[in-house]
Amino acid sequence: MKKNIFVLSFFLSLGQFVFASEVPSFCSPNNFYKLEVSSPLNSSDNKGLKRMHAFKLGQTTLVGVAVGDSKTPSTQKLALALGTSNIDQNKYCTWYFATGNETALSNFISHPIQTPFSISVKKSAQIFMNAIGTSFFKDGNLSFMNCAQDQHYIAMGCTEQKHRGPTVFGMLLSFAGCAPTDAATIVNTVWGLNGLNPDVRNEAIKAAYEYGNQNPNERTRFADLLK
Image 1 (cartoon, rainbow, N blue to C red):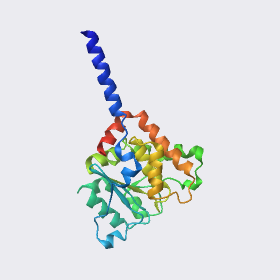
Image 2 (cartoon, rainbow, N blue to C red):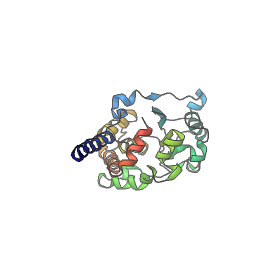
Image 3 (tube, one colour):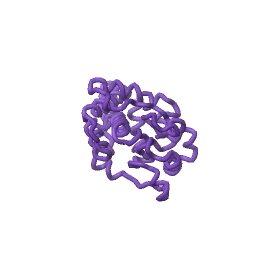
Image 4 (cartoon, rainbow, N blue to C red):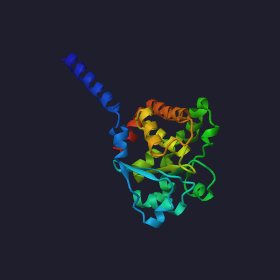
């Protein structure tokens, strides 16, 4: 009897492991592109958003936008339209990875990253993870985890949404369990490389994937919020 219980427990544990390791369906690039949604804002406000693409994953909307080049009021209105009514208390769950737009710096979650053209492949993982590593789940109400759970919204971008912003977007997907190659394919297709060395982006995305491996409970919890 004890032997049977042991065998049953083993297979139940194995099943939980397989389930926890399951790759989310949105990780398939073809599936992901189908999740794109249009902005609900009027034409005037939409003109204030530059290089914006939004994707509805479960109850959470993920947005990549040129935060620095967009009009801050338009970016705020997008968060209010797609997130919850009190999202302004979480700095609109919008991350800004550059420094040129003072209004964006004061209104959104600031995690500056140096221009990737000055980042070597060897140091890419370290630089990107040092800049945004705590954003995955350690920054409390200003974390990707909290914004997905409570505000159902995450937006991010740099100045032009060409290099840093798409790279971090790919990192978010790989932290959630997407293979780094799929995460890179998604962001490269949506926003392009725009002259960036692909290995600089790839190394950062792989680092976020490994961070998810090191924090499996947080990965599973985050991925569940996107299903």
